[in-house]
Length: 92
View 1 (cartoon, rainbow, N blue to C red):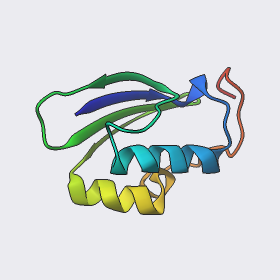
View 2: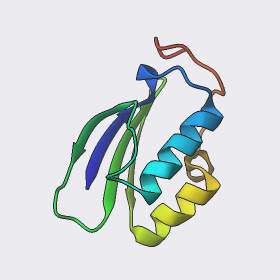
View 3: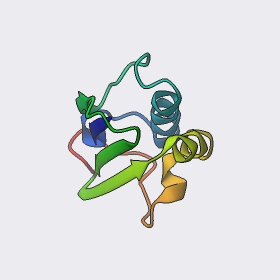
View 4: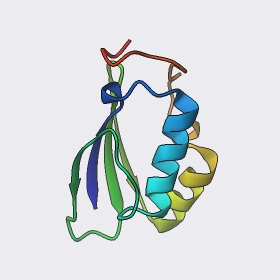
């Protein structure tokens, strides 16, 4: 599956974002997707995420075990930059 996420579309607090993406990682076809721009089945068993947050872009490819781990620990634990707790829809 391939998804493109633009966090700048939603001004929810980072904790909400972590929970929202975590629920999607566990239940990819049965969860509301507030900031998803693309959701497509590419036939791959892995999940490829293109994530845009603020002015940064991140590409992740996760197998089922990694998806479960990220759902529990939060996606910000797996990146190498600080993500602002609050922002506006304009991306700040």
